[in-house]
Amino acid sequence: MIKTFRHKGLQAFFETGSKAGIQPHHAGKLRVLLTTLDSAKRADDMNAPGWKLHPLTSDLAGHYSVTVNGNWRLTFTFEGENAELVDYLDFAYPVCCQSDGSVIICRDGLPRLPNNTSRISTGFSR
Image (cartoon, rainbow, N blue to C red):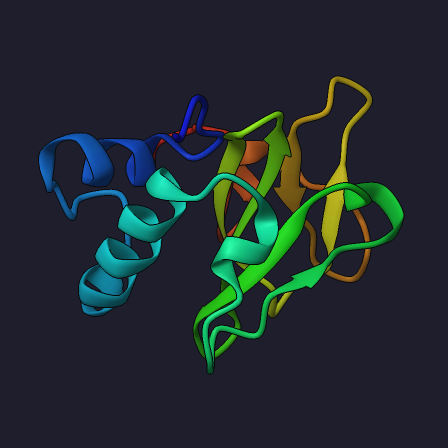
């Protein structure tokens, strides 16, 4: 079961179907991924053909990633049998983790304030 989200737009999509906080053309794939993740008991349950499940490293060690489309990924961790910290990221830019565990997208490897980033995954709305 999905317990927590990092991305508020993704959470709203999961709970209400609102596409306001996601790329609308990703809605179909995200619906399938989130439905599967919600019933998953472990990360390997997300290892479907073409989803490219893999563990992340560095600052996101302990997180897993599956492909949504192009550079876009759904990332998550598992605590027991529950998915947590579910996020929706554009990996076209480097991901920077802050000391509080929140994630922002960076350009040129330099962290930007939320209003200067092109994509934020910590629950800030656009």
